Image 1 (tube, rainbow, N blue to C red):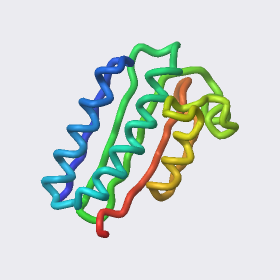
Image 2: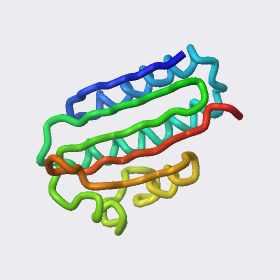
Image 3: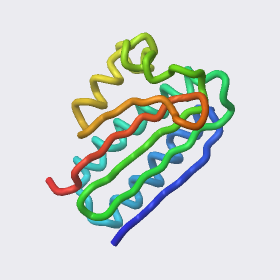
Amino acid sequence: MEVVIEMTLPRNAESAPLVRHTLDASLRGLGVTSEIRAEIALALGEACANVIQHAESSREYEVRAHMNGVKCVVEVIDGGCSGDAAVWKRGRRALPVAESGRGLQLMRAFTEDLQIMDRADRNGAIVHFEKTLAS
């Protein structure tokens, strides 16, 4: 089975739980373990929180997820400023966690193939990560 989720969300704090719950329900339906679902939810939450806090030039952001029973691929896409990927990579855009700046390290620890890139067609950045669904 293949599941694709595409959401355009308002850049506010209420949107992050909605997208996390939607993705979690889909993963649960595919039989993914609670441990792997929690790791994906943590990474997704960090990426969404960063957009909500820092992509001030955008009113919305997008989340795209593709799950096929073997792998989950997630992209969080903001409409922020040009060159945002470089800001992410230099660590100047601190993710809002208990100890500021740790969000990127958490995303790296709990996912595979983390990439942060500028959008090709407009301003903003794309946070891309993958996670193998088998434990």
